[in-house]
Image 1: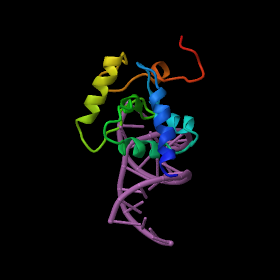
Image 2: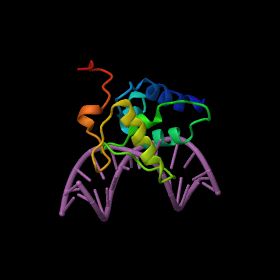
Image 3: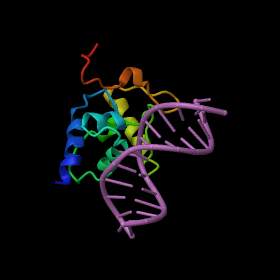
Image 4: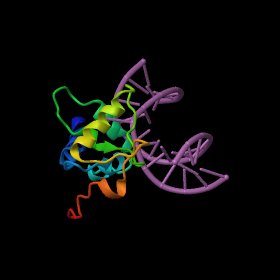
Length: 108
DNA sequence: TTTATGGCTGTCA
DNA sequence: ATGACAGCCATAA
């Protein structure tokens, strides 16, 4: 079962609430595979057509958006997050301490 | 099988 | 804050 590995990752990403973000490492840990942060990126990169997984809510540990193959994608992802209420600064990064999704902690 | 690469992360200068 | 380095592990060739 090779697909299940990604399935767990997708399941976690899907649970990220609107206006909240999660880091690759966080998704990997929640998916039960701590340390597979990079593989999370691959999983998202290998997203099947038609899946409306909120991949844009996944950012890197520095609170920034990791560039994909396409240069313009960063801008698109940021725009989507801003639409959901996530605030970015001029440098293009957000405050993880504030927008990071907390599965255990209740929303404040 | 081995190598190279990658939507990462954490530490150190 | 930025840049360099070292871990980490799956996928592709």
